[in-house]
Amino acid sequence: MNYVVKLLVSKKKDRSNNESNYISKKLCITRSFFLPYIFNMNPELLLKINGLVSKYEYPFLGLLISSILINQLTEFEFRGTLLIITCSILAVAYFFSAFGDVHNMPSIKKPGIDPKWHFLVPFSKKLVAISSAISCMGILFYSLQWPGAINQLIAGGSALMICIVIMLYLRHKNEDLIRQSLLIRAIALVTLLGYAGYFAS
Image 1 (cartoon, helix red, strand yellow):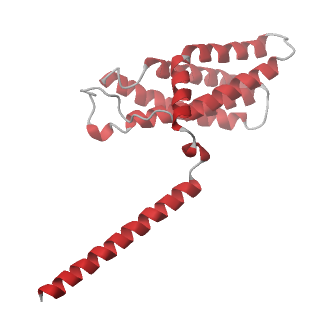
Image 2 (image 1 turned 45 degrees about the vertical axis):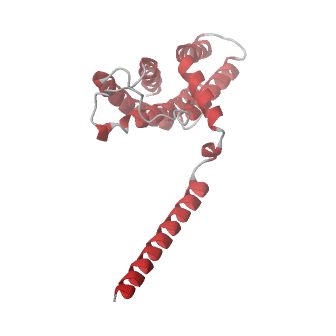
């Protein structure tokens, strides 16, 4: 009787192990097939991009605003090309910076929020990075009067406003959770998008 029980238990364990192995293999295949190529990039490169964006946050914003003003207010021959280069570089940098933050939570002893809401920190950082990239392309498309600008302005602006609400909440709980420059970038981009949307309507 004991032998039969042990045999049934061992078969059940083997079956569960096989099922878990199948599920893990299926997940690996799904991830390798569907996830974009950026997840296979060198992590050090993503960290460097994220570090550069964090370090030069305000110069990047100044460069973007300067390019917009040059395109709108001057007769510079290559103003469109300058805006294309600036917005494209910033969009790429912002997008890849979303995947360069390896820490889900800052290394602080008292984060100030319930552990079940800790996911808001990496979520808001990634969302503001990706929506910043969309916003840069929306500004580019609007400034050069390319089709599809309004859709990008709405998508980028809506996501950024969600990010601003989340980041204000997190900074209210603890200022160390979200850096101030990230919040200022989101507010600046929403202002630029609102300006573009106002004159587009």
